[in-house]
Length: 312
Ligand SMILES: [Zn+2]
Image 1 (cartoon, protein in one colour):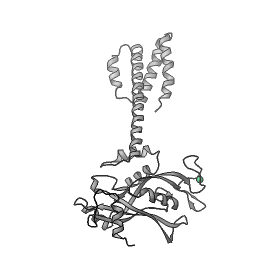
Image 2: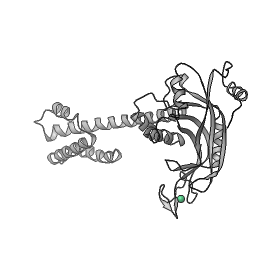
Image 3: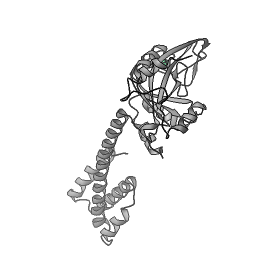
């Protein structure tokens, strides 16, 4: 396929502040995604690819999902869907792919990257997008709303069960991943395709040991998750303090010869389950010693339901 340089520069210059010339930019073609079942057992419909073509146009791509500098990014300036009638997918559809033309401004910093792209090293692309519909390939049930009995990855009547993605809502980013089947590539794609993926974001953040770029949506999800964790942390802290106070009271009654302060110091390293057990056994012992004391009995009754509420 040949590309008209003048036309392409016109498209590129819609995105630039100063007018770029042919020598300023490096242009290349890439395949963003297709309608074949992928490693995550997901497949875009050809219609979804058409929708994504519109959404991806103008989107910036990164390298290995890290963004070391503005210079190391490329922008898609033209996206289109291409059907290859000579190829049939595993689902019996005409092989259809979302293609794009991208450009990078040539700088000293990205000479190496350009060489890698030209040499075919940077070949794998992963995309981040939000899809409105995710259906079972066997029965068509909406996986998120209703679900169904079919298991992804299993074969039913000779057909591999997978998720069918359609109704593209948004395209966040695309990126090059250096090595196919790299763990990070899978993770990134997973958390970008669908919205309720906070756990994947957390996993990605935990596993990351390099610069990491999060989309706005992902950042908001992460912030929300941090808020929830902070609240859960505060609850857990309050519960721990309550257990320690119960233990202190139990020590005073059941083990009067023991130094309460030292005993509680020793409890410092215990996890919540050990503290619960200790508090309960001390309460039992205290109760046995003071069976008629209503105050303590009251507190013991109150403690038990709380314990269940806090089963972590
Ligand atoms: Zn199903």
